[in-house]
Amino acid sequence: MLFFQTRCSPLRRKMKLNLAYQRTTYWVHLSRQHIPVRIGRCNHRLDRFMNSSGYKKFAIISATNPASEPIKKSKNIFLNQLLKYKIIRKGLRFHPTLACADARNWPNEAGWIIFDNELSEIMTLGDQFGQLAIVTGETGKITTLVWLQSKSNLRVKPDTVMQKRRSRIRKSLMH
Image 1 (cartoon, one colour):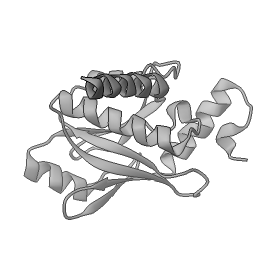
Image 2 (cartoon, rainbow, N blue to C red; image 1 turned 30 degrees about the vertical axis):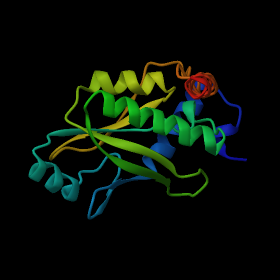
Image 3 (tube, one colour; image 1 turned 180 degrees about the vertical axis):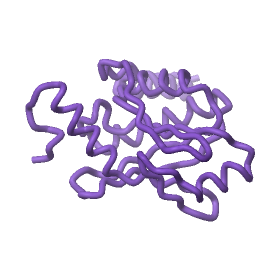
Image 4 (cartoon, rainbow, N blue to C red; image 1 turned 45 degrees about the horizontal axis):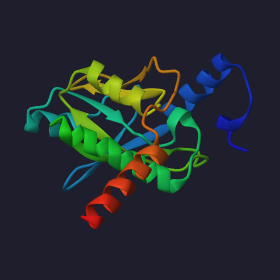
């Protein structure tokens, strides 16, 4: 059994999750390179990319496994595509990421690195997708974990959204 699924007090669970997030490599996938990002460390390779692109700060966000509770792969894929859609609609600059737990006791989680955006807007997106935390950083500074205020209630319900889309598709096909 994964330690995320064990029953324990909320404080103890948060401490375990904090440790798990710190023991994860967040791979940033750029067009010609993959850059590992770690919480609590500076990242000179990412800094070089950001400086050459004119970026000053970043946030890594995912819609995968809301509240750090595993869900079906198909729902995770759908939620991450929905998050990507929202990122594109907002006109944000982004690249894909992949979070890989060092202990390999948790499935890899796809996500997105967003550059030069207000932290509050990224936190709101994280809350909407039921996330507990996001990873943030600035050029020349240590990468940090930011806990979100959400009670991990997923406000974007994948089943409801998929049903609405299917209904719209059916209606458009009938006309």
